[in-house]
Image (cartoon, rainbow, N blue to C red; front, side):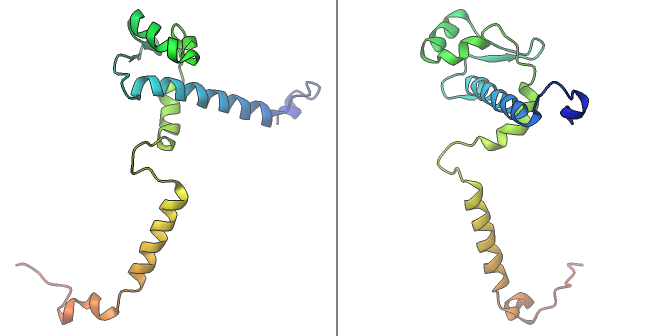
Length: 134
Protein backbone atom coordinates (compact mmCIF):
# COMPACT_ATOMS: atom_id res chain seq x y z
CA UNK A 1 0.00 0.00 0.00
CA UNK A 2 2.80 2.42 0.84
CA UNK A 3 4.45 1.69 -2.51
CA UNK A 4 1.21 2.64 -4.30
CA UNK A 5 0.87 5.94 -2.47
CA UNK A 6 4.57 6.90 -2.68
CA UNK A 7 5.95 4.86 -5.59
CA UNK A 8 9.35 6.59 -5.79
CA UNK A 9 10.01 6.83 -2.06
CA UNK A 10 11.44 3.28 -1.95
CA UNK A 11 9.99 2.74 1.52
CA UNK A 12 9.03 -0.67 2.79
CA UNK A 13 6.25 -0.55 5.37
CA UNK A 14 6.90 -3.95 6.96
CA UNK A 15 10.33 -3.34 8.50
CA UNK A 16 9.45 0.24 9.46
CA UNK A 17 6.24 -0.80 11.21
CA UNK A 18 7.90 -3.72 12.96
CA UNK A 19 10.66 -1.45 14.20
CA UNK A 20 8.17 1.12 15.46
CA UNK A 21 6.10 -1.54 17.24
CA UNK A 22 9.23 -2.97 18.85
CA UNK A 23 10.26 0.51 20.06
CA UNK A 24 6.79 1.28 21.42
CA UNK A 25 6.66 -2.04 23.27
CA UNK A 26 10.13 -1.45 24.76
CA UNK A 27 9.21 2.07 25.88
CA UNK A 28 5.90 0.85 27.31
CA UNK A 29 7.71 -1.90 29.25
CA UNK A 30 10.11 0.65 30.77
CA UNK A 31 7.24 2.84 31.96
CA UNK A 32 5.16 -0.12 33.10
CA UNK A 33 8.08 -1.40 35.18
CA UNK A 34 8.40 2.02 36.78
CA UNK A 35 4.71 2.23 37.63
CA UNK A 36 4.00 -1.34 38.67
CA UNK A 37 7.42 -2.75 39.53
CA UNK A 38 8.44 -3.97 42.92
CA UNK A 39 9.52 -1.19 45.30
CA UNK A 40 8.50 1.54 42.80
CA UNK A 41 5.47 2.92 44.61
CA UNK A 42 7.00 6.41 44.53
CA UNK A 43 6.19 6.76 40.82
CA UNK A 44 2.83 7.93 39.59
CA UNK A 45 1.08 8.57 36.28
CA UNK A 46 -0.16 12.04 35.36
CA UNK A 47 -3.19 11.31 33.19
CA UNK A 48 -3.47 14.89 31.97
CA UNK A 49 0.16 15.29 30.84
CA UNK A 50 0.58 11.57 30.01
CA UNK A 51 3.88 11.17 31.82
CA UNK A 52 5.49 9.50 34.80
CA UNK A 53 5.78 11.72 37.86
CA UNK A 54 7.93 11.45 40.98
CA UNK A 55 10.02 13.61 43.26
CA UNK A 56 13.47 14.62 42.00
CA UNK A 57 15.23 12.45 44.57
CA UNK A 58 13.25 9.39 43.42
CA UNK A 59 14.07 10.09 39.77
CA UNK A 60 17.78 10.61 40.49
CA UNK A 61 18.03 7.41 42.48
CA UNK A 62 16.14 5.33 39.92
CA UNK A 63 18.00 6.76 36.91
CA UNK A 64 21.34 5.94 38.53
CA UNK A 65 20.50 2.23 38.38
CA UNK A 66 18.22 2.26 35.29
CA UNK A 67 19.81 4.47 32.63
CA UNK A 68 17.09 3.79 30.03
CA UNK A 69 14.40 5.60 32.07
CA UNK A 70 16.04 9.02 31.90
CA UNK A 71 14.31 9.78 28.61
CA UNK A 72 10.90 9.65 30.32
CA UNK A 73 11.65 12.10 33.11
CA UNK A 74 10.26 15.06 31.14
CA UNK A 75 8.81 13.31 28.08
CA UNK A 76 5.18 12.32 27.73
CA UNK A 77 4.14 8.90 26.47
CA UNK A 78 0.60 9.36 25.13
CA UNK A 79 0.21 5.73 24.07
CA UNK A 80 0.63 4.24 27.55
CA UNK A 81 -3.04 3.47 28.24
CA UNK A 82 -3.68 1.95 24.82
CA UNK A 83 -0.50 -0.12 24.90
CA UNK A 84 -1.31 -1.30 28.42
CA UNK A 85 -4.55 -2.72 27.07
CA UNK A 86 -2.55 -4.63 24.45
CA UNK A 87 0.58 -5.71 26.31
CA UNK A 88 -0.34 -6.13 29.97
CA UNK A 89 -1.70 -9.61 29.26
CA UNK A 90 1.73 -10.65 28.00
CA UNK A 91 3.46 -9.62 31.22
CA UNK A 92 2.82 -11.93 34.11
CA UNK A 93 5.01 -12.46 37.09
CA UNK A 94 5.15 -14.77 40.04
CA UNK A 95 5.36 -18.45 40.75
CA UNK A 96 2.16 -19.31 38.85
CA UNK A 97 3.26 -17.79 35.54
CA UNK A 98 2.55 -20.01 32.55
CA UNK A 99 3.37 -19.83 28.89
CA UNK A 100 0.65 -20.27 26.28
CA UNK A 101 1.82 -23.77 25.31
CA UNK A 102 1.41 -24.96 28.92
CA UNK A 103 -2.07 -23.45 29.17
CA UNK A 104 -3.21 -25.10 25.91
CA UNK A 105 -1.78 -28.43 27.06
CA UNK A 106 -3.65 -28.12 30.37
CA UNK A 107 -6.94 -27.31 28.60
CA UNK A 108 -6.49 -30.27 26.26
CA UNK A 109 -5.81 -32.58 29.21
CA UNK A 110 -8.99 -31.36 30.96
CA UNK A 111 -11.03 -31.88 27.80
CA UNK A 112 -9.75 -35.46 27.46
CA UNK A 113 -10.45 -36.18 31.13
CA UNK A 114 -13.99 -34.82 30.82
CA UNK A 115 -14.64 -36.83 27.65
CA UNK A 116 -13.62 -40.06 29.42
CA UNK A 117 -16.19 -39.78 32.24
CA UNK A 118 -18.43 -42.84 32.08
CA UNK A 119 -22.04 -42.23 30.95
CA UNK A 120 -23.55 -43.82 34.06
CA UNK A 121 -21.74 -41.25 36.19
CA UNK A 122 -23.51 -38.45 34.35
CA UNK A 123 -27.05 -39.64 35.15
CA UNK A 124 -26.83 -38.94 38.89
CA UNK A 125 -27.27 -42.62 39.78
CA UNK A 126 -30.68 -42.95 38.17
CA UNK A 127 -32.16 -39.68 39.45
CA UNK A 128 -33.97 -37.35 37.14
CA UNK A 129 -32.00 -34.31 36.08
CA UNK A 130 -35.12 -32.13 35.96
CA UNK A 131 -35.82 -31.85 39.68
CA UNK A 132 -37.68 -28.86 41.09
CA UNK A 133 -37.38 -27.58 44.63
CA UNK A 134 -41.06 -26.45 44.73
